[in-house]
Amino acid sequence: MSHLDPDRLSLIALGETATAEERAHLDVCDECALELAELEYTVVVGRSTVALGDLQAPPERVWDRIAAEVKLGAAEGPAPDADDGMPGAAGAASAPVEDAPGAPDAEKPATRRRGIRLLFALAASLALIVAVVGTWNFVRQPEPVELASATLDAFPAHPGASGSAVVVEKPDGERQVEVDLDDGEQGDGFREVWLIKADASALVSLGVLKGSTGVFEVPDDIDLREYVLVDISLEPEDGDPDHSGDSIVRGELGFA
Ligand SMILES: [Zn+2]
Image 1: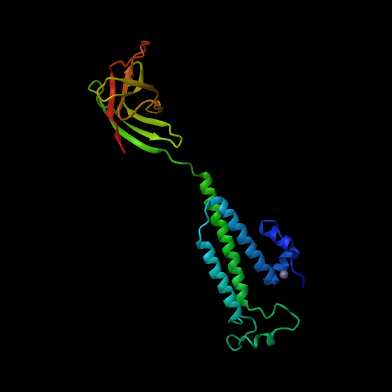
Image 2 (image 1 turned 180 degrees about the vertical axis):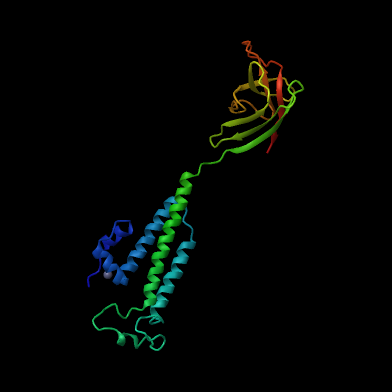
């Protein structure tokens, strides 16, 4: 029989669908099947190199071991479940006698075929791992890192109010404060979020809090080790941009 064209094998390894004729040949020809398995492995390694950066050594060692086992199996003679119905009775030498003459592959033991199936299974599972890891790397976004957090305590004028603040740094270096306020009452005016220096010598407004939760960008020039107080104030609609002096909650940032 003539073997499959090496170019076709390469294309099939790359994912092109084999024709029925090619599949039929691959089913009966261990040589082509093994070559395809090896090509598929090469493809998997090539793709995994793209997905994973540095290729680790272990897969190659594992592969060598399996390849060695396959060769070993081929030299061991027929497997016990060979369909001549004489398990164990025939040695490697006598097996070919049982086979029909003129079938070139007949002397190849079932062990080897199982080995090749193993190669296929390994190639398939490697491909799956590569696909999963590749997808994971693609989907995964770098996580924001928590820098600091604060518990916000109520001022006497706003008993029962409570809140929290968490400062995170995003992968691009931007810092954000996420505040959470539970103040029950809805007074007149609006609520504004501030960062204040520990000695109250300076403060900066982060913005207006609508609802109970808000995320605010920390200006680049603000050193959070100086502006350690997170404050939420109740501001009247008086057009005055300064802090009203009516704080609802305030807390000091603790750094992670
Ligand atoms: Zn062939």
